[in-house]
Image 1 (cartoon, rainbow, N blue to C red):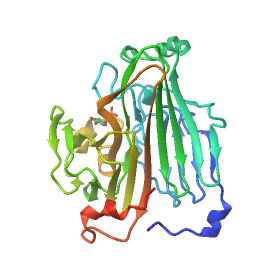
Image 2: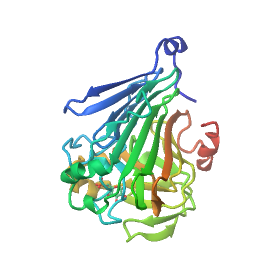
Image 3: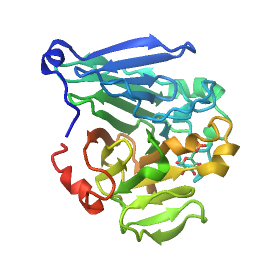
Image 4: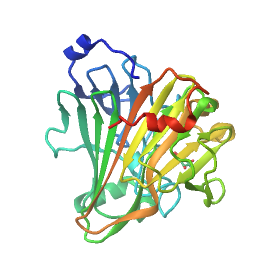
Length: 336
Ligand SMILES: O=P(O)(O)OC[C@H]1O[C@@H](O)[C@H](O)[C@@H](O)[C@@H]1O
């Protein structure tokens, strides 16, 4: 059941999209839908940094200590890991997309678009032959180790029911093949990590980043959290649900083109060691990230890869114990 809205008020509003500046002077795109949902996308990182519902409540987690200081990545929202995940390669941790300045994509035109039921922005990060020299100067030596001409297009959409959609497309415009990993490192805002469970990953195999990426099989009914978790779930299904008992709110994730899903919470000790996360903030965040890690993608010249990530919220009157834990995903069958 979604939160009731006044249909007359909804009919009067139109979706909107505009380019603006944040308080640090960074370029941001603000999307608004008819119901009062909104999203903010920073051109720095091509990163969604806010997604709010019609009551103005933030649905993504953003650290109170996030640094808006390039080349540091912004801690929260949806950073993009590309062309490498974590330290699984020669270049910097999680790649360079999250600390590069993206542009508004002039193709398709117009790049900031609205229709009756959605607001859209198209961003691009590219490295063509003519850009290589320019980008090389701004990149660390490590990033130069992945030196191919590519175009990464990101479409961010705020849909008719406030759902947030990200479509990622990577095209090889080089003369040589290249291989990459990618993750949409989504930080969800949760009431209290101890009150949250994740459904959809039961019985899957995962690589445990805390144990030298050894392979295990998930045993439990659903994932719950009582200590640090850092796992790459392999061949993850299309739908995953994050159920927040305290808020009676479920995030429904639908993905396409991303074979894996990362689940991460740093917990107390690691949070304390992170300069851009307050000590207690690990309690209010959970990362669930559509990703391609175990089997990286190779594109020949001219080829393109596409992946989609769509998130929506469902509010329900159930609370812990009232609903069969295995049935939440099934009961969300109408999600398109
Ligand atoms: O601190 P970073 O580079 O943003 O990474 C945060 C976390 O990102 C997760 O996706 C990884 O699985 C973790 O291992 C990592 O610690």
